[in-house]
Image 1 (cartoon, rainbow, N blue to C red):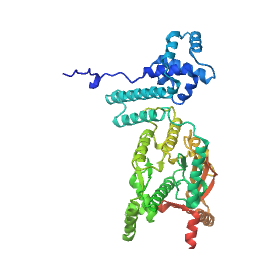
Image 2 (cartoon, one colour):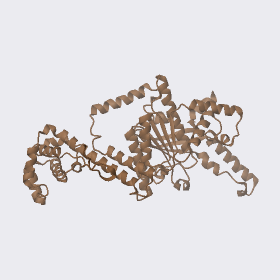
Image 3 (cartoon, rainbow, N blue to C red):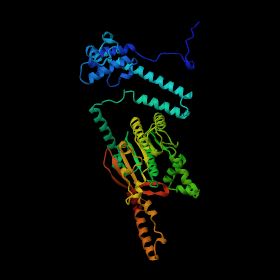
Length: 497
């Protein structure tokens, strides 16, 4: 008859957390015998990774001495621990000598270190699992089920990214090879775009397209057309991805993820359809379109249905949830661009409580930059501007206008502002009651109309920061009726043609 194994809480077997005391002793012995063995583990191993706190304290002392250029052996450590009164705590001089006998060979130091680190990872996984179980039983009443999932995913993500094994130096030869690969890609692509196209020729010329791991900020006051421009860029990128795959006769690889925290997926789809079909979005909503326009609307929708665009319109999305969804999309469909509309509507990671709104926004921008680096995709995030813009005579935005800026400017690889003079000039239309004669009113009205004609459908894209290239102003053409941005010279060419 089989013996019944003792059961612990929740019916799980009672087991000791993973540890490897022999590996810990063997590694410490190897380090004491030859300090050069430290180089084999210094990049990923830390004192807290040891299951035995005594061993962690000894490793910490060895680390301190080796990194200071001093000898760390049984004699010097004994003297150090005696001086600090900790010799008995680390097992005395006899235990330091015993560690030397546990050494098998310094050539195995790396393997011992990895075994210790793996056991630590497993203990962290157990801790995370216990926290998830306890929270599910109600240990944190303020966290509902969805938030508990986010908190668990965030803990796992931190463990995966902070485990100390990633990163490190790469050779300059490897860096040169990567640089040449990027340059070659730009050479073979039309328009010398090394990155992912924005769909705007002049912007691509200025930036070389959107590059992997970059955080791009597009900011502007309400009514400037931030969302319309972001959708133009997302649409252009998705179309380029599909065209590139079709040219190779392959399935589309990569996709564009749009996180719309302000507008619904249906509203965004309507905007894209309006832009491409050139049917007024406002008239679409009111049903004021003829049969011909409706037919064109349906035809365009069929053409756009295959675009690799994915829209998530969850309001008040947390950073951890966004990261999880991006990683899932990257794994299943491939991911080439992330668009966030807009970052001030996001919430920080579950479980964090920033002291101020500025700190909260800083956490969000740092998290978006981390997503860009981890998934190696560009992230385009929209941002609001402070009201200080409205109090100036020249209302063109500046970097200091970034709302609740914190580290937005610091974390971003590029910062762009969208500005339309027409928006402000329209608000300054002369009113007849403000003039004491019809002639003066008519003169003011004529001047205003001339000024409006000069700025009609014109927009400025101000590239105020670009970490890898020049800054400057780009002129764009904006048709508000269709939510459509285009290169202004292309519009002039089509008119002349």
